[in-house]
Length: 407
Image (cartoon, rainbow, N blue to C red; front, side):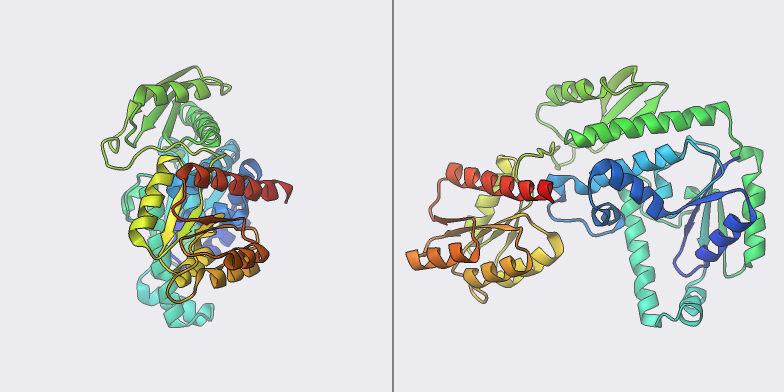
């Protein structure tokens, strides 16, 4: 039997259709939470980090941590493992990870006019109209960003992404269920030796993708009968060295027969390929109102493979901490509004695991005593030697990672 995937617009009766199909057929529902659980198990990342991969919002630190890309790699592996089975009903945006060449998949989209969806939200689910509109817009935005990341365009409701599109405002539940079941029995989506081989290719590609992610790499992976093709989509200064590194890693994956690399369409774009170094600080928040100084410092840290983001005042820093979860801070004391000491006090009260390095040009011994008592990791004076600051950052990061490993 074929596999059915369902992507539904919010408030379009998706849950009811899934319930009908699960109860009245041989198909077993695979919900998003099931795939996420598999990804959590193989990645060691927490559930919130994995689920964040589906959000339109991307952390300012992601270009250094590759957290979203690593999450997707493990989601793909979890899905590929489940796809070895038959009679599956896979729901939600994770289904877009299934390669098009797996032909025994019936891809279903449930849509409805906005007026109908709002009525469903208000009358059946007790959601306020304003809240319903917000959820509808958020889903559209999240799905658009998700598709773009997967190189599938930016329109989540494009008919070309699906085999059938069902207007749920014009189709009752029994009729929709019958239509899906009939289409799933069609020869067009019947399992063949070719499509079964494509499932095996999907699993091997996912295994290679995860292995590369574990080594800090992020490239596109395709597999065919044991032959792996790696596509590099970001500019890199030493291409030959990167290609050799990638091949050395991939050749060790069981089932790989050969490895080829190629340059993708995005290779000549300004963005630079960065390998994630798990031992270097990658989530450093710099807080200083001297814009030229802090921007220069950020650039110098990036040159040393340390990922950083910048806040120009205490209030912005506290807001970023709530949203971005930095692991190490470099904090100035003298700033307009909330000063550095108050920022340090609040950070240690709300996020005690963040290590704070105070870096100031006007600090006194009294200031140092207060900061160290509040829990600062170090107290440094401007101008600072970049080597000393780098070493201090590495030590602070080691302390953070040590706590994580213990926890």
